Length: 464
Image 1: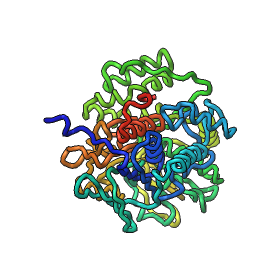
Image 2: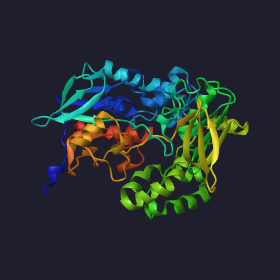
Image 3: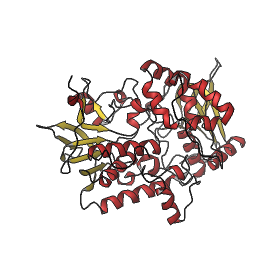
Image 4: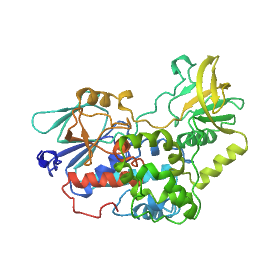
């Protein structure tokens, strides 16, 4: 086969790129296209309050902190100190600070607003929802909005963020009283109508559940919170004053298959935090080198343990969670939901603790889905995702983690060929990269794709 047939097309300065999704991934990609003097950009986001911030930073409460120190949160990979300088200029912290997510959202919005103002009209924002992307004669595409508007473009970049979580097994929301089941763990009225004798059940025990528990506390809920998941694992905490990790030079021998053995050996010498952190530079290489079978085993058996050690809590957040647990207001348990039935204005939840055969009954005033984001396209109700799947323009990755893409971030069609007209960035590409859900990974991905589409491959430093 002629290799040129699979080479990605380079956009010209007069081309038009439409970015579908204006959260962190999409906004940062648009900013980088402007920084590389690339093609004209239209950034589409359905909700103005989420522009640049996405769900993670727009729905956050002031008590929700970043789980990474400010020193590693610059949005610009070629300027590692950018966010720290912004914090200093606003008197909001230094490189060691775990800043509020709302503060980081303000930083991102300011970065995007400045890029729009300085773009001389080459970067514009459109509020609305894209429900279809269709090819047209030649190399172009047409994007159709939910309100009937159409936009002609040369390239579309999907920056869809995370898909909403699926309803947990054992629950049928339609069979429960109104207001009992909450699909949105960041809902502004999460504690509304609840009393001190009520119990809130959080389905999930990871970072989303931590956010929900803190939000309930901040909203004045004084009842009991039960957080449950299959293994009952909760995120570990960062340590104040911990030295920065250097990272390993080469990926560990044996790859993902021997990851546990490698981490245990390194943890005996450096401590588990350093043992995990030093894998950051090579995690994507480990994933890329693993077979689909090995990746599947990792997801089934190791992912929950990896997540709680890899994505940690700011010390202040960990202290608040510990206080809730010690006071008896928060219980974290391993178990599986069996069923939930209506009981007046509440629900009777039957769940079986791990290792037990007899279910426990909990009367819940509210059940909150904290299972975290999902990526199975085939279960998505998003109109655009359903349209692209039906048209064969995209396909799920083999592990159903998101959109299947090639090494140039081009979407893979149903027939297995890449499409120069549709790219994808952000968490929905985790099937090919795995580590692409945090700021340090997404900023490099968006930078790399912006350089390719701007024909600026040799500008700046790779992976800074």
